[in-house]
Image 1 (cartoon, one colour):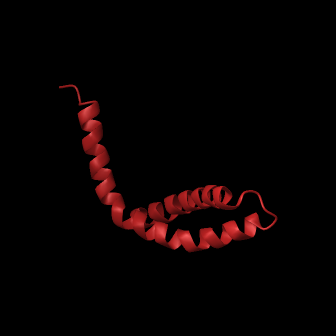
Image 2: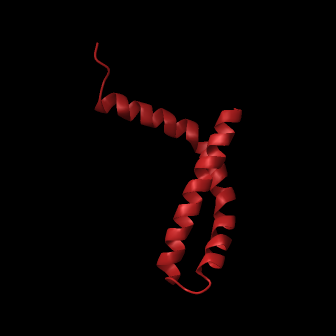
Length: 76
C-alpha cells in the first residue's frame, strides 16, 4: 500500500507539472506571468491528479496486463 501511495504521488506530480505547463502555455502563450500562473494551475491540479492516480492505478494495471497479453501472448 505504501509503494502504491508513493507511486501515485510521484507519477501525478510529474504528469500534473508537465500537463499544466502545456495547457497554460496553450491558453496564455509565453506571458510575463506565465510561471506564476502555471504554478497556480499545478497546485490546483496535483491533488486531484494524485487522488485519481491512487484510485485508478489498480484498474489501469489490470487493463494494461490484459492488453499486453492479447498483443504479445506468452509463448507456451
